[in-house]
Amino acid sequence: MLSGLLHSHSGFAYLLFLVASVSLFVGLVTMFAGVKPGLLKLVSVLRVVETAVGGLIGLTGLGVLFVGKYALGVAWVWLGLLVVLIQALLLARGVKPVHNALESGTTDPASVVGRGVALEAIHWMLITGAIALMHVKPF
Image (cartoon, rainbow, N blue to C red; front, side):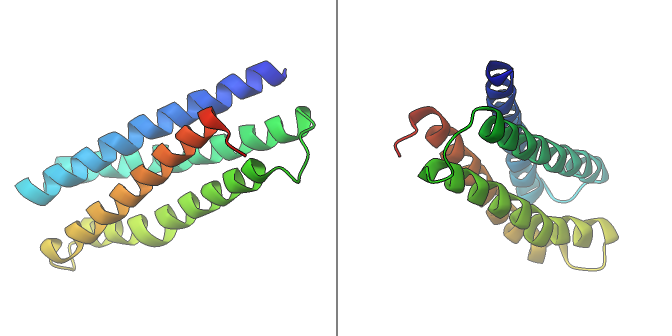
């Protein structure tokens, strides 16, 4: 059971990395080519997938924590929980309002696309760092 949870946890992390990479690429395309309705639909789907996969990562991580009987004093356990919380807040409070502003069309796209791409880049770097720590486990 523990092995399955560990593999699903890391598999979901790789899936999130892939989805975040595609989302960042779409953001860069939007920044340089302009806002297109097809790209906005893709961004909406990617946002839902990112949120769902992030939740699955958190759930499988908690499953690994409790099934594996890890000590709560281990630093990487708390670092992992912190990464999940930061990722959720970044998507909910940073990226989502940018996407909603683009979809509603009430704001100038040029004013919010750059901020959205910067937030997606931070999200991508956070995921990359979490995957690196998942493999190295330096603590």
